[in-house]
Length: 439
Image 1 (cartoon, one colour):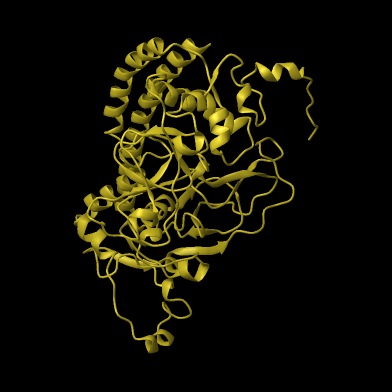
Image 2 (cartoon, rainbow, N blue to C red):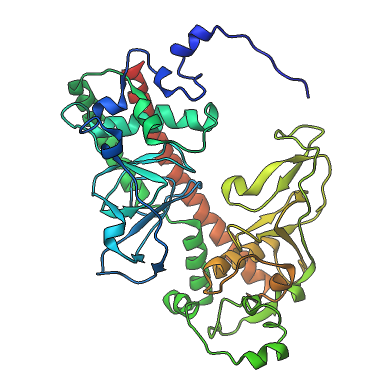
């Protein structure tokens, strides 16, 4: 692959927002630094972060305290105004005085993982070191205008131009905001707020894929979804002398991954995955020779663990799997399953299952594994292994019923995709308004 070269006048760095390495002050030559807009212009006191507590308890502490963590996955999981929030969970933490709780309606900026992502809190939550609470002087600047500017103009630079994976308080303070009178900012905000309202209404219609899958299985199999969820959280006593007598528990107690503990669906047969598969095997090493772009030579996708881009990490000249298969993440997003219909090369800790399609449909296998949600099954699993996957027990109805489940899930996911397209269309309107006023 030939190297591409280009020439540039370094004086352009001072005015070109697309080029900047790590000198954030170059973004707008005539702009004003963010630190000048802070409540007391001191980044150490006006930009705050917290820490990750050493202990968590999955029960309410005083019935109200919540903790925020960030993810690098673009998902909408809670009502908070964000796309990359991993979770705001009802975690109780050891000592309230040792942690920092951001206020409701605070401007939050991610400084790690999803660097530059900004949003407003819809309720007070504890924050960790991966996010900043930015306290602005709202007599000088409109908080929502800054939020949109950071998301629309600055954040894409972190994804494309800047190589930094972490943003410090000082670096955030050096980012320049275009000098626009607050009165104009207020008018822009007033123009955008009706669009935000439409986006909020559309978001209320969004159901996460995992929940769609659960709803369809509960509806088709006719069982109580709440009882199913409760069944996965049960604890049970075990006589350790029994471990050597039970193949499911031998060597690793967590190898018993039947997520339907004490929960059986009537009139449905159950099988271990090894009984309905032609082959189960782990991925190998990442090939030395690969491409980040698919072309006529590097034709085959390379899949690894992960949700982003469905696990694609590059393209290979050769494929190891040349028939329908379901891949299962063995590390990270443990148990995340995807039905693969193309030839591919699995790498690292990704387990491939070649189903016996006379018994089970490939897409049904992926959906039922995601339905059972191994990662949140109540088991402590550092990683999945092939023997553990072989022993997972799943409900397997007739092929006709399987196809109905697959079709219904696909239809609902397609409907959700249409809603997300509408949301994106409204967001583009906001992008245009912001860019028109600053350019």
